[in-house]
Length: 380
Image 1 (tube, one colour):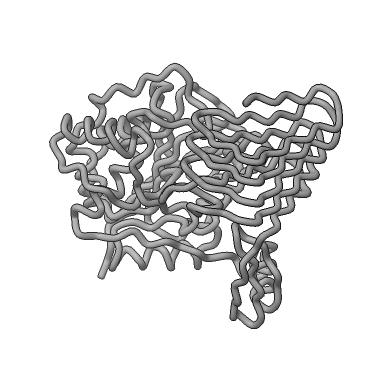
Image 2 (spheres, rainbow, N blue to C red):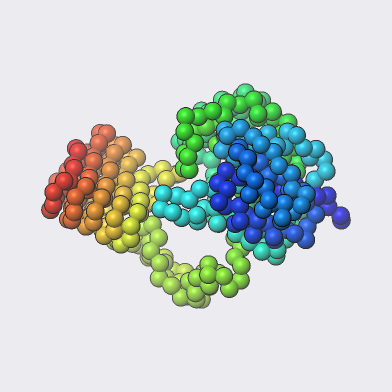
């Protein structure tokens, strides 16, 4: 069977990531494709790099609204999609506040890190509607506006049933063109994409609803999303995964996992030690919550020894005989939303600017809070 072309759409906001994207695009050079690049600000160096990679690259200047979503919708509105079999959607992604590009790298590497990886994913479209990195395929919940009232409002506006579906978080994916045609026909450009501040990790915008609509349309068309979990053989990540499966002892959430020759045994975990910087520990109850999803937790010991770490305890969880300790700079413990604490101890043991905040109808019984230095802030 001879397939039509692949439509490749790349949105560039962070121009310093062009080299990274072009390097990944080398994995599709043996395929028949058309390359379109959108950006919200002209950049001659970016143009030259793409033209040196593919002399037929086409460029389109768009408004700087709606993250990568509005430029994508603006682009496909001008393209004859009947010429294509599938679409590859890519864009730049900012690092997180700790300087990590792990989200971007996972999305790209599992999709097109090598020609073999991309070919495997391309072949999955014979059975699936979309392909994305397995780690970043999420289920819609009911807490965020783009999963609930805002999603339902927009579905009513565009005339589709507001069903729940899985979606690729980050909108970097490979998709059958039938799904993209349906997205185009929904006339999503008419939505309001304005927001006061666009930044990494934000939510509650029309663009975030459209992010979910790709998965919703896929489901409505009786197709599924394939989660790709491929790594380039002998790469650093591949080596780590191989060694981990041969033998490893790993703490994850409330469990400890002992793995030997691809067989894992799970043990209950009661100590949670954080020794690095910039970690966040959320202890909450809810189907969309992570990492510790428990209604009642007893005997948990949390110890923090790095800087700028955060513990968030929320959403009706119950804690008994637990110990939370910060022995570092700039640590925060936040307890809120009807949490019940019994015989729990919070300890701050080091330098300034550590904070404990316990709010919003929390019940405290036999509590003990110890501050061993200056400038701590405790709000109860």
